[in-house]
Length: 163
Image (cartoon, rainbow, N blue to C red; front, top):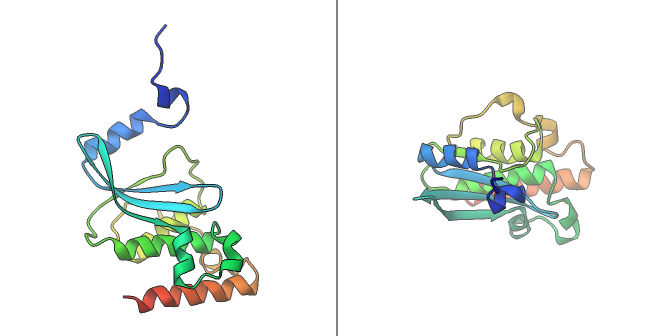
């Protein structure tokens, strides 16, 4: 009986998808969810060795005006969108990249696609389907309380000022 590779056995790596990413030769935007934050990375591969060029976490929004007492909402759809915008602003080469969501479920309107929408709004060239993005109301935080809506506007304005 053939033994599977350790990371495949643990459910951490999809080697078929990874092989396709490596064959493309394009840099990747890697999006991962943790228990508290969203992490987005601009990654390049050279001879199957990944190198993270730029990494941004939704925790970085605290530096851009997100209040510390609202730290629990850093995993929300608006925070995901702003995280994508923050990463998109830091990417110098806006050439074509591909999205790597790992083993996470692809659900239309999810936080992963909110990050993607933020990246696309800053000019990053990623193949996408507009139907997968969350609605504009969710991105602006209209489904949340008014405090969060004000925070989202303030942080977005802070990101725009730093252009």
